[in-house]
Length: 132
Image (cartoon, rainbow, N blue to C red; front, side):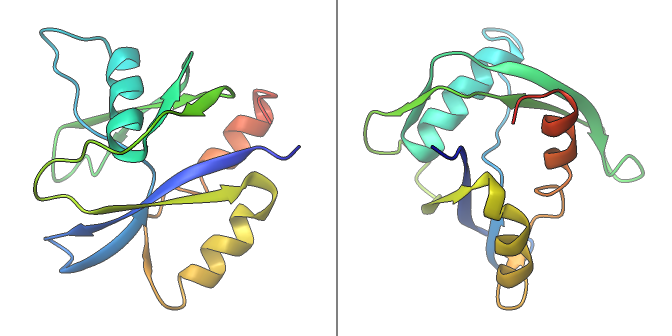
């Protein structure tokens, strides 16, 4: 059994193209925690239900341009329960990649597709925390 990571390929207007990226989304700070938002976003974007999410890293992104806080989560127990529930403007292709093939996948995809820069940065953190 090899663990896999779920990625998404989605059109991003600022890039004018499809981007391969980690599933992500916003937190409704009034009604949900970051963990609840992570579970909801994974389900909406991929159709996979996470039984439990474990926070692994908090970080900031583009601090010179925006006030954007990122919280990364890990789950080892997901179940595909059905169709995605994307926003009207979203059309998402879910890509499952075995973790032991992720580096090669990103290198190969970057030759023909735009790939989010932080996909690979998560691997050493998962290894350091002994989650993979």
